[in-house]
Length: 186
Length: 179
Image (cartoon, rainbow over all chains, first blue to last red; front, side):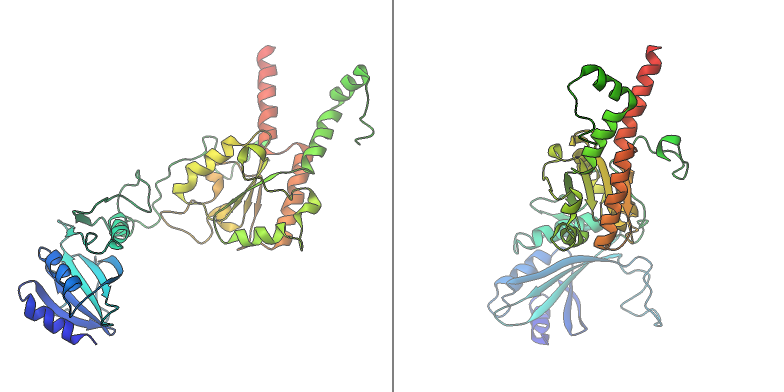
């Protein structure tokens, strides 16, 4: 669909672009972490690109992910970084879409923030930080947005036990055994 | 009962108080004038509106007037999912209500957490506040809500609400300490 965008990106930033691809008619470009801001600035301002509409920003946790019924390929092997941060962009002028993905290793989950280019990514990056613990550099206000400050850990990471609650408040008169009936509560 | 209890004679009033008639009359008045505080957080709120609307008409039972200040209400209706983040707010609202007060958990989410079995949803609002009547259903039918309200009214009349029992318990302990 937007093959010319991918071609232009590869011609303009041969060192920054890791690879390109297409998934379910969405064109994807994998970009290295360090030149991400430069690439994004060019995508927003270049007259032939003009990606002015940010659609979403999120993250993928690839922990223990195995492709169903497929042997390990060049796109998937044990050295693949654990996290992928995705930025979906759209241009209302040229009607094309592009997904920019950045792969982050498990031991250094940092990514440049794009909130300065598209302010709508401000809260989306906060959500990504809240749920996956991705540290966005130069983000204006990187705090938790859904969970409370006292919450420890990042709940949407695959290694977080999904039913592990971290209560803020509980009744002090709860009996140890909830099924035990006292005369007052019978 | 109200006519029966009207008197200007002090000795008669004292005798009635000893018999527990005053408490019974007070509870009779309380159960027909429940002021609800709707703590609406989720889709069950639609069903609460249906109960409060003219078709099912909770006003028939004297509980029609939602007060949006906890200080003016005595029946807390927890309508919808309670998250762990919301727990302190719910406890604060409950603590601000004047005694005696009653709580209805409206729907399975408020009663047990429902189908939310995850890190963010609280497994029932009774983890934080004492609940008098639980209403199952996702969401419950208005008839169930009215049934629960009638059950609560029986509890109020018999003085078996959580806050009523606590007052009784405190009075018993105080009497024991005096002896």
